[in-house]
Figure 1 (cartoon, rainbow, N blue to C red):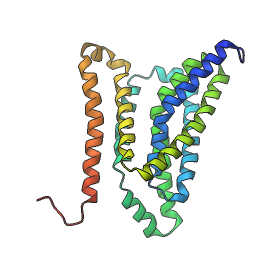
Figure 2: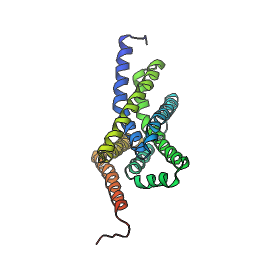
Figure 3: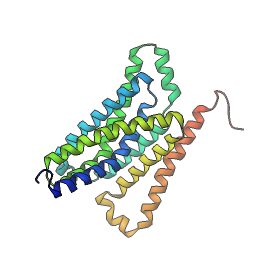
Length: 238
């Protein structure tokens, strides 16, 4: 594909659109994982989390043909993403802050930082499959377009996660919106598992019911867990 030709430019536009649409989920994961860190570590987590996510995508891009042949990959990834969405929603902010303050040193901060970084990279490895497949398909075999797609996704994730983090600090309820988006993404991954397509085609109502159960379950359980954690010690429902 010749550089700056019409096919090249149309493929590049398609890749940019794919990145804008799919990188949003990754920005949400990065922001929610970094929100519990001390201020001085949040920017570091965003930068390193994005670089780690890009590294994962590079590896996945190189083995995308093999990934397409792995049975049940989308289903397993969707189930894992449900757990990640719940953990990000129901993470105990106060417990982690107490851990850092009580330790009074770098060890606790490093533990929290690496925990957030691990969550970011694992989540992106799960969600990055759709992005990698989309970019690889739009690139039509052009290695240059694949590289450009990866490069374009970096500022989108860094800027997006920074913006979301600021909004979360101002409007904490956005955490539930972010977790809902991740839960929706998990349901979409499961519903697009090739092995399950005959079942969903035979019973289309199950697909919509699954979306409601997964999103509602993550938000409902996360809300109840957070409510329980905020309850004063020794109190009980009458």
